[in-house]
Image (cartoon, rainbow, N blue to C red; front, side, top):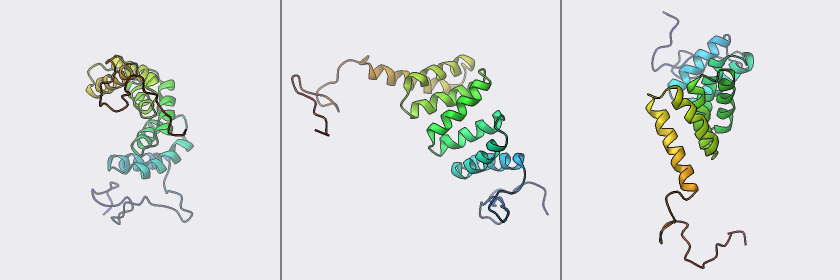
Length: 176
């Protein structure tokens, strides 16, 4: 009996293998909405790389769909593709600047790429839009602490700390 819903623990093809149904040419079966639903399910099940494949196909077919792009950005972030995630979160946020989750995603992706100034800007926007969201506030605190530490706001390094140089000692580049 097929009730149109995948049963928990079964693969998307009903075999238990977790492989999305494909046509002979290796293309996923179904339409864009099917790809989106299967991609979102894979992401929820902890398979971001597989989700990214389906969601990228859906985004290529419907490039202006913010929900598809957001799901793709989440899959890319979870798969460690931070630059790609940033671009998709950015596209969603530019299409709808009041989307607090897209601003948050843009901010945390920027932080993973080491751009803490951009991170702070977008995380602050997310917090301003949804001040009760604890993980938004925690990410903003962490980014601001990183920026403060980089500017020396916590004072000089103490002897024995990583990176500490004795007074008068020169820093030598490893490439010299």
